[in-house]
Image (tube, rainbow, N blue to C red; front, side, top):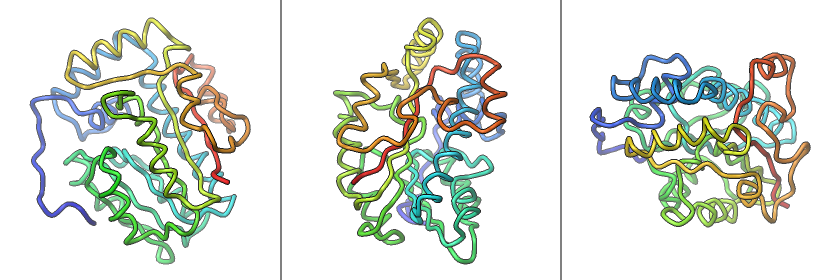
Length: 268
């Protein structure tokens, strides 16, 4: 575990996206302030619990796809509170020798990082306490476990909608990470969009922002910008449940719309 020498304090006075997300997934690692916001957003946008589950399922399918393509290194930024199966469990089930590095900036995720560090004997897992907006630190620390001269799957699932175009230069930020990756690497992304449920997403956005949490849903053309210069894997950028669905995903899709786009691309 790296980047965590200074044991940061948990701020329970304001909600944190990882803990709000944890509540939607039925977890217990959240505080009243997180539960309050999670409930208010759910009341305004009934798709959010389905969306949280859909993102987790997409991560699993995308990681298996990367592993089947020969990827043996994974960098997961914006990890969130551990929810089984975690990314390393999916990757190492497909290829036990896989190396996985997690990164998140929430102190409560750091407290639970031990759960992310129990992988296969053949592979390895590590955790970095750092913010996605500090790529220099993340890449430096991740480089202690991963070989960036070899392909890496970069997972940014359900993360970019917390980063602004101008405030965080999100497109430049993602591009900077991808530029470091070797040819053959994968980019795995999902993002909330107003296209599929405009009223609910607008209400959720307002509630997030009023709570002090920046939130930036993106249209299909905007989201597609993240993949410029990369080779999109089929079926392309698509609503999250439609990305290479398995039977359980088809059943879940019947429950209703999920306003999330997803895509996976290869760097050539």
